[in-house]
Length: 306
Figure 1 (cartoon, rainbow, N blue to C red):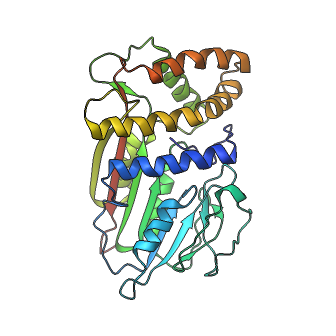
Figure 2 (figure 1 turned 60 degrees about the vertical axis):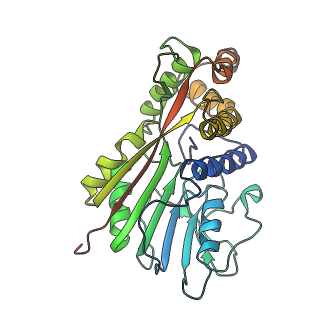
């Protein structure tokens, strides 16, 4: 549910970094400790990670690829100040680009097969080579022109290369009706979606990743759906644990991104937001509300003949 370079959105760097790390663990738990699900080849040499946050995914992927048999030059991305940015640079880990990354999101260890650069992912991509694998995670709300993102991804992949998207979509849902339409959590989600639509960055975008990917020209497109419980209401140990992380993730960022959208788009006062969020937090913690967040992994391949 990270929002990067969204006009009208604001997040403190520390808050954003904490949530980025929480989300990394959530996706790993959801995907049974796999960093990717796309059937990428073992001999890939160039990888792009779009919107990497604190860089945990890219660092772990780089460490996994550290072997003489798996030489890998990986280009990452990071969002140092609320921007969707390409994050790449020199082998010594020094930063280049138009922005300096915030020290809070600076990785403490950078594998030698990673390079770093910072640029705007919404603008034209100008990489000197094409990639074998492009990875995007938690990019919800990041782009005004999603079809263009998928088109650029296709253009910058090698024939046979893969694009993989991992994300969570609004609104939360319940299968047993315990999340009533009038509940504060449901009303909050509706208002968030309405505000995101008004600024051109819909929070329901992951539901369309598959169709956008197919329209861009990808083949062998697969969509996998998951559920992130809102709290620890499930009896199953795996989903109870997933719910614990989900609750921590949403509560960590709730105030920041709600204030940004509700005050700037809906015209609410800070006081009105605070009062409203009291009810939302009660719903988030209420184990009698069996709500969950729909989550998606969508991946597709660039045709060999393209």
